[in-house]
Length: 398
Image (cartoon, rainbow, N blue to C red; front, side):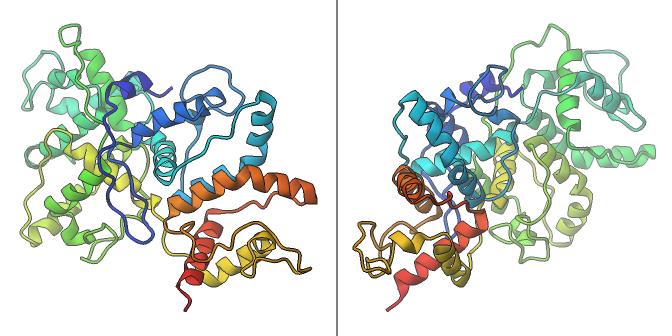
């Protein structure tokens, strides 16, 4: 179950949309803002998110929305026939999407898994007390004095990302102390930081029950932090390689957010050597900086790379788009058609513009396809990438 009660407390205005290239999606400052759109457009009437209520459609909180923006856009498109039946049965109007709304909605759906699941205190106890674990140097809520600080103070923070941030900032001192004790530094699996955080909150006792919430992470601010902390010197300005480090958009980062933070820590030992060689100090994070950086990294695979215009032309023909959207405005039997020629239109001006235009056009297209007895033309994310490249090429032809 997702911690949606906490999410509602940290919703903030979207603010300016930023961070776009020819193929990148304009990620909102707060991807969770799409939750309000999810409710306003009526999606919540068929789909739940993280609760046990019975709905017509699947529980989206149990889904992993992986892939790029166009991959999610294709999933939405392929779901049109099933959704259309439900809309007709309930006599509801088809919800239209603007370009900004398509971005907000799909960004929110992609962001769901960032939030993760509640931690397991029993697993957290195993991590804390294991050989070379946190308990070698730290206590929680009093007890025998150890070399490290009491971790009970961390229990006031509901987000495991704050625990991860404290561990990161304590890294140089921790590594030096463990080296003196002959201990190997800890590494974290995908759920370890979440479980450890849950155990710390459980063990801290009733004295520290007020919870402080961090914002979930601003991916656009995270892009700035990526540069200011020196990460771009190895991974390039856009984190796609260029300074000797790997392209992080293709690096198999785990999900959710705490798993990404754990992976950063696991790689910190090698990164520290590389940073020292370049004269870069160990970066420290304050307030929500780590959450922002992790959100930036989380969204890196979301942006689509350029498609192939020639393959897009095949999609346009094989999916019978040219039956209605013929460049000449007429079908092969010379019968005039009313669908517009897409060349010169704004339909492919951005990935979100194409997804929104196709979604808004879906009810009319479905009626036309049913009238002709043709199957619904399913698409993949790659199909949409290539189709957009084809439409842009047509627009740029002299």
